[in-house]
Length: 225
Image (cartoon, rainbow, N blue to C red):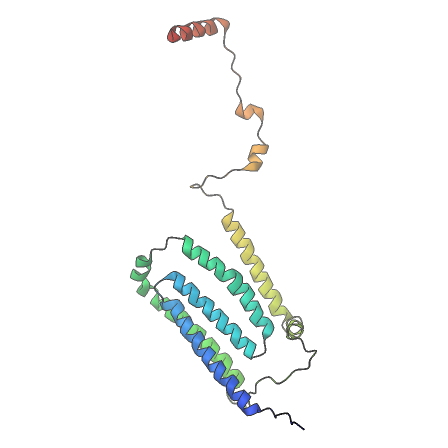
C-alpha cells in the first residue's frame, strides 16, 4: 500500500521566505530605478515592474484581493495613463537634469519624514513583542479574503474609509473645476450662449433712403464698367 508523503512545513516555509526576499529585492531595485532612470518611459516601466512585484508579495501573504486590485487598477489603468502622458508630452529632460539638485533638499526632508513614520509604526507593533510572527496558515475552504477585508473595512475602519472617500471626492471635484475653468488663451465653444442668442444681438437692419440707394447702385455699375 502506497503511503502519502508527509508535507514538510519547514521546507515550505524556507522556500516561501526565499521567494519573498527575492521579490523584495526586485521591488527595491525597481523602485530605485524609477527615480534614477534618465528616460521617463523607462521610469514608468520600472514602476509597472514594482507594482507587479508588490502584487506577487501580497499573493504570498494570502492577500489575493489586494494583489488583483493592484494589478487591475494601477497596472491596468493608472500606469497605462502615465505611459500615454509621458510619451505624448515633450519633456525637456536636459532641463530636469539641470535642476535636479535644487529639489534634493525638499525631497530629502519628505523622505526622512516617510521613513520616520514607517519606523514609528513598525517599532510600535513589532519591537518588544514576544509572539513569533508566523505565516498565515491554511484557511477554511469557504474562507473569502474579499469578504473578510470588506467586513473589516466597514466595521473597524469605517470612519477612515469614509474620510478617504470624502478626500477622493474633493479631489475629483477640484480636478473637474480646474479642467473646466475659463482660460483667455484658449478658444472654446459655449453652446449655452449660442442657444440663448437673439436676432437683435446678431442682425442689425439699416434703412437707406431711396436717393442714396440709387446713387450707390449707379456708382457700383460705373465701377463694373
